[in-house]
Image (cartoon, rainbow over all chains, first blue to last red; front, side):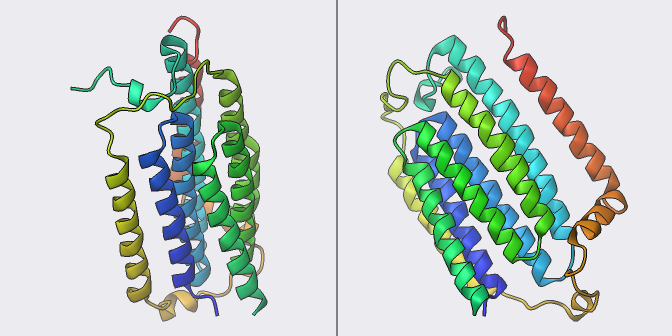
Amino acid sequence: MITPSHYLILSAALFVIGIIGVMVRRNIIIILMSIELILNAVNINLVAFSAQLQNTVGQVFALFVISVAAAEAAVGLGIILAFYRNKETINIDEMNLMRW
Amino acid sequence: MAQAIAFYTLSALILGFAVLVITARSSVHSVLFLVVDFLFVAALYVLLGAQFVAIIQVIVYAGGIVVLYLFVVMLVNLKRPAEAHRDKRRLARPGLALAVVVLVEMAAIALYGYVGPSPAAAAQGGLAAGNVEQVGMMLYTDYLIPFEVASMLLLVAMVGAIVLTRRNL
């Protein structure tokens, strides 16, 4: 029997894989992809509870999360391209202009 | 039983490909693993009876966002490896440890904090029939204003992306 706990643990694991990607990698494109994984983990949670509670609201919110993820990807990748054109790098350790 | 087998198979595939996404040497491989991962997540949505979200996942994520990533990976042709320069002040290992702590915490919450469905919610009736119809009804009645805000957000993001990638920024 698959309970919501199973889905919660799956989504927690996916979330943590995303966090590890954000923490450990230095290639900013991979970091953005890890953020997409995190958003997917959130969506799994929302849809699992939507199925459990027999209520469509969770799926509606999953759709909103997907649209925000699309907006984030477009703007984020635009920033990466603009930065690459100026600095010739996508390594976040070299993006330290505003660092104290 | 069949549902359990499907769930465990899909979970293993989702987590396995997620690990491949963050460990792959080449960014192109990473993006391709990400597509496969999104497709398996869509299959999980079908398993949960959320067909509309599954279709949107395939169209928007696997079809749109990932192609955008692939374009950027191709446009950014690096003369030296992306991760060559390493900052001494970067704390990758403590970050990894913190991530594991978060996993343990969330698993504990999921295991001990589980509450069954409230009787009122369960009495509302099944989701089985007409999933797309129900989601559409909800989007265009109760959540009309958030829906419009989301579309406005997408418009702003589109304009923003165009402005950001102009030559003379």
